Structures are given as structure tokens and as C-alpha cells.
Length: 323
Image (tube, rainbow, N blue to C red; front, side, top):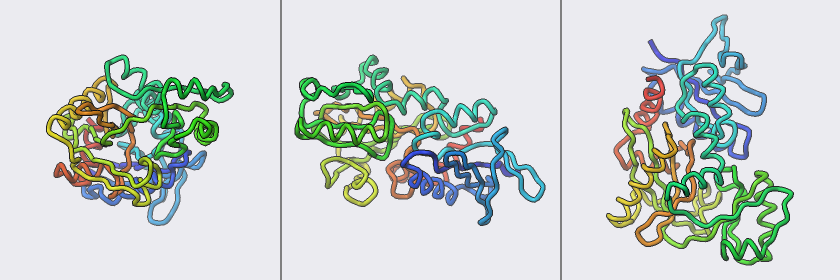
């Protein structure tokens, strides 16, 4: 008998449109001989299933819906929501309370990794190399001289909790810091300012695949812009080279630290982490627990390089969740 699978997409953040693209690709590639897949859009208070061009409201008391007099309940949820509430632990906590299996990590791990400063703090204490950082909360006085003294110039100003490079600026002059901080505050109430690391940028997926932790072939990021911003990611203003053009020792070091981070944080499901190489050492930038799943996204690129089809990639995530 086919398992009922809800593919949740949308969300409440500026990443909603990207999430819907990801969720649609998941739906298109799931093995329909094994799964009865349903697209579920979640936007603010509007939760609904879209099936055969019809819309059915979700009953939030048990995450079910009714069609033709029958109540449909889900065996597993495939989480394709970037940002809140899919990537910050809110939705996964809800599914945990209902006892519904899902493809993401437990809610605490989701919340921790979505909060960049807290995630960095945990990993820094475990010896993971990373940039120097400076934190500002909304309402605090912005001391630009103190910022420059700690992190130097150029530096990156980013929202503490946001994805797809929304709200991120690369700042070259102290006088430009206040405007960049305001842009970041438009996305979140806490801003993270980090020192600039000059080196090869790579992105690497670490996933559970067929009951094992697998480090995928990394992708090298070569942006036409000052950094891998939204325009570079989604408007073709970058080269994404998979596998990355790095040395054997760099690859070995990257695989070790990427897997170590996955294990330190007690992750499960999908992750994609970003690093900058300083010499042969990878410096950690951030980790995404709901990476993009479109055909052009980095994780699917890496899966293909590892010989894994999207059908196998998504199906394995569901089977792992159902264990």
C-alpha cells in the first residue's frame, strides 16, 4: 500500500517562492509507485493541500485533510520549507507533537542551526575554524569603530536568521556599516558581522542516505559579484563547479570537518554547509538544514555527481524518516 507523503512548501519568509520551486521538484521526482504525494502549501495561517487543481484546507489538529468524504492522514512529511517555520524548528516540533515522521532533523537541531550566532558558538567551542564575528541586537548603539577593530574591513553584515543571502552586504568602508546593518535588521532583530575570509568558497552536502551518513562531492562557488549573493545564486551570476577544483588534502580535510559538524550537532536528514579555504583548512560559514531541491540547486548537483538520482535522494530521505 502506498504511503501518503505531504511535501510542505512555502513558509512565512522571503524564501517562500524558492521553497515552492523546491517542493514542486520533490513532488515531480518522488516514485509514484511507492508514494501518494501531496503538495501542501503553508503561508502564515493558510495551510492547504493542492491536488488536481483543487484546494483542500489542512486540519491543524492532526495535519489531515478531507476529500470526497474521506479523511487523508500522512505517513511522512517531506520538509521543503526554507526559512520559518520549516527551517527554524517550529514546524518540526509540531510534527513531533503529533507523532508524524518527517525528513528533517529534530526541532532543537533545526532551531540551533537556523540561529547563526548560536550555531557558531557551539562549533567554535568544539574547535571548528571560522571567521571572527561581532553581534548587534536591534536597539543597541552601533559602534562602527569597535566593529572594524574586531572584524576588520572588508566584512560581511548578515541577518542572524535568514537564508538565500537575503539582507547580506559586503562592506568595504566603515561609513557604509550603518546602512548595511539596517538592511540586515529588515530580516532579523539580530545582526551578525563577520571578518572577510579570502580563499576558495565551497558548499558541501552531508546527508543520511540508505542508513549511512554520506558526504557528497563539494561544489566550488565562483561568483561574478562581490560574494555569493541572491543575484549570484538565482540569476546565473556565478559558476558552480561540481566537484570542486580542490586538492586531495583539501578534499579530505573538508570531508572530515563537514562530517564532524554533522555529528557534533546530532543532525539527521539533509544538510548543506558553506566553507572558505584558507590554505588547506576549511573555515566554516554556516549550515542549512533545508537546502534548495530544484534541479539547479547545489545539493541535487552534488547528488548527481555522486551517482544519486533525485528520485533516490528524496526517496531515501523518506525511508530513513519512516524507520
